[in-house]
Length: 302
Ligand code: DON
Image (tube, rainbow, N blue to C red):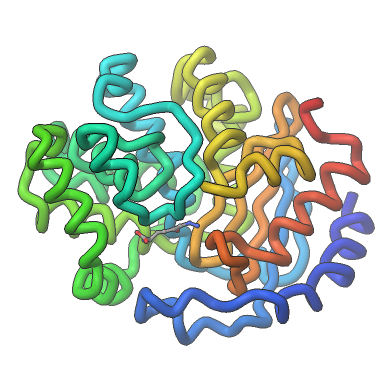
């Protein structure tokens, strides 16, 4: 497998030039576009990796998978009264559908959906961003994982659209806590820094029916893993999720920090990192790396 990862890395690295590093979050602007990491963690506890796979990067929307896990545990099916499960053909930060759907976001991965989940977690935890950091530390076995305060503060200062989404949802009664408090916590969860290796290991429970194979902890119920993976497939890369399912055929979540997390059920988890993004906000080289791996190793779910 090591050979395969090295070959994939060599092949996809040049594709980074086709993308653009996110510049609407101050901390992401200055990330080196040439960075590239790849890790595959398997259920037997092995990790294969190449490139900058141990280098922490801003996980951004990949954090939405873990906040969804916490929300599933806290409130279960009640969650779906406040957040939908439908794909969206608009960008991740769009407000259009919120107005049309009486303040109910299409799914948990578009920004408004993740904000409702942050609101829900804020109602139950004094500092929901700390709960997310603890979960990632425990599941990855890396107790140094944390969020970057400067990155969080920089995003908060320019998070006009996320604040607008929160106020719009509040006007419909679908947002209960203070907008600044929740958007602040959401910016912090997005500013968590973690590496390909740590994210791949942390997410292993998604490939193993909800039980984390290394810690032995039942992180979430089996049925919820099925639902979370279905949502990753239908909405994890936003408006291009259909295309992603067509070409890769795996549950995937992207983040504007350039990370891509892909679940390979009953096998393991792959995480790629390359900062330049396509128009929908997913890493160009990262997505291609996952595609090549899934196809070469015959690991798609179909
Ligand atoms: O709220 C935002 O816009 C960012 N903190 C996260 C967006 C993101 O990662 C979109 N995913 N590819």
